[in-house]
Image (cartoon, rainbow, N blue to C red; front, side):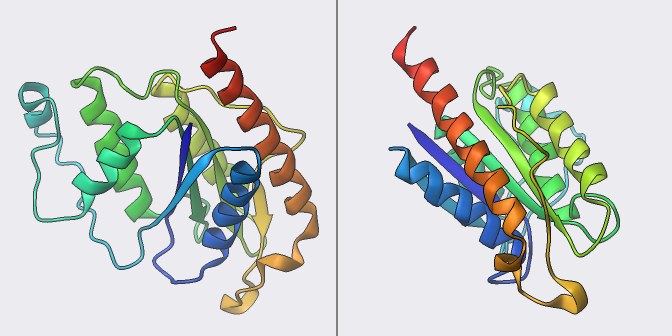
Length: 193
């Protein structure tokens, strides 16, 4: 079973990258194959709403990094996305990826159906819940399975631009539980029981 984690921050070694990697490490300890994909240094154009994917069965835009990431999303059993929160929403580059992926998948077999995953959002003080809800809606409309948890997958880090995610100890416990639940769901789905 393969789980990919997509870091939406354009900053290298970002707080959201830390939390996505942390969760992937916990999933690897549960026997999952994992891979981290950073949007840092990548170009993802927004969806044009051209409907070219309807006939082509894939997004027809070219000259950016969407295709490679989309292929990895297609091949994964589980998908986690992490986003920094600057203005109470997920960052635009991550939403461009998710909008195009979700729209394209509708015309290429709705392949996100029954994949497992959830988002992680990171803010310095507030706005996580709105961004978390925004990303949850993407999982929901793509017919994905979202494991429950004892709290939302939201973290506090980065006051003044700091890279200090290891200081939010509470979210480590939250993400530990999320990873256990996600691994449990994936194992159940793949056992046939």
